[in-house]
Amino acid sequence: MPRRTAAADLLKLLRGAGGMVSGELLSRELGVSRTAIWKQISSLRAAGYRIDAIPSQGYCLATEPDLLDEATLRTALGNACLIGRRIVCCGETGSTNADAFSLAEQGAEEGTVLLAERQLAGKGRLGRRWESPTGVNLYCSVVLRPELPPYEAPQLTFLSAVAVARAIQITTGLQPAIKWPNDLLMNGRKVAGLLNEMNAETDRVGFVILGIGVNLNMRADQFPADLRTPATSLLLEYGAPVSRQLFVVHLLRELDREYRRFQQEGFGPVREEWARYCNAFGREVQVDVGSNSLQGPFIGIDHDGALLMKLSDGRVERILSGDVTVI
Ligand code: BTN
Image (cartoon, rainbow, N blue to C red):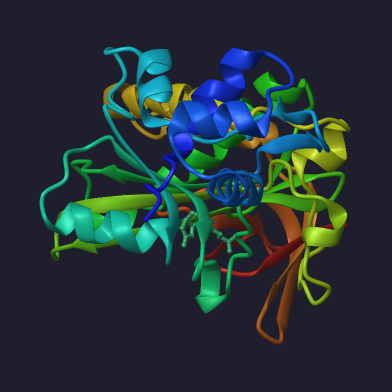
């Protein structure tokens, strides 16, 4: 029975060849049949590697996929970062938030990051599904153990929105807008969503999972036709693919910076930075809450993340959830 060719060995040979390499040579070097080589080439292609084949000449590795890799990410972040001091990358999972939640229940340290190439049951807000195709986007969950009362935990959503906005700006030079409470938009279309989940006792947070989904290199034909909110990706807005690996490094660095500042200075600086990116802050807005609709200037964010709106009679209304439209 032929030995199964390890993809890593085959890749090493293809990379080392720096051009065309014959199937015969690969089969000889790896001690397996040419059919086994062909099968392995097919699975590498399925994993995103572009391998050109020319009859009677052989194979050539044209491009490699932008896979998320723990070791490279750890090296890029260095030892000073709290966020990402442990990084777990997986090929496929149900939901990185669900995985991070169980890891945190088992005692995972603060700053643990989970990344997946694909999610089979990606969770969105309000029980919705988060579209999570393979190898093109970012599906990330971070374990935090802040010393906060549970009602202040939503502050962390604002913190992660700022970090994602910054990472997008650093990567593409384009400025996204934040839509209250936690959508990131580019040209009015959703490019990223945040879903934070919490474990808490009555008066203190046990842990928070920051769930971050960013549409990085998703093509137009990969979006489902029935999306409630119009969506986009950095590829579509920027006009070229972005390195997922580099994006993660920027994002984790920005999260680390914002979280440290939050621990030292509290919510104030996060709130200020968030307001700078918000598309509606200080403007006249309409907020639809179920079948009710309120109108007035959006004047601030409360400690629990509530939107503060000034009503025509001078009262300030606190809104905890709803859909905001700038008038
Ligand atoms: C939203 O509805 O806007 C929130 C979407 C959050 C999606 C991310 S992807 C990584 C993490 N794992 C999940 O299952 N959901 C979040």
